[in-house]
Image (tube, rainbow, N blue to C red; front, side, top):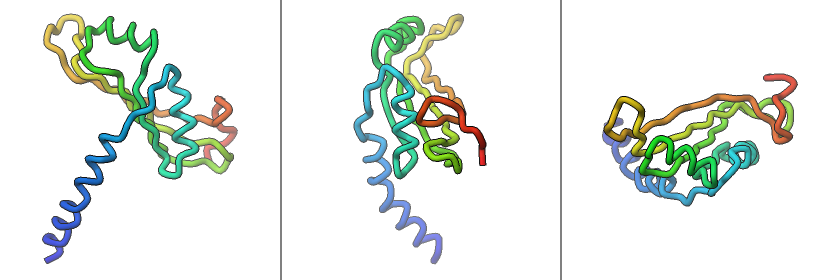
Length: 125
């Protein structure tokens, strides 16, 4: 009986998850905007799309077919106000790497300790 209840719950949750994935992304030329947005967000998350000259240069270099997506999530909020441990996830579809002619989806995660003032926290507790 518990499995059935879990299935019903998961089925009800799927449309909300899909809607969250389809939420508009903030266009940014500076990733720090999303870092601060995630720190300030009650959910600890911020989603964006990298735009501007640097994004174009990266996309052209790898002959990519998709935009550079950035998802920032808070892993831990530190006791120092405005400071968190963040995970920054970059992803892009249609990336062509040297030596491999077929396009692929690529992603990378970067973890960092960051404060609203752009400095690392004085303490990670």
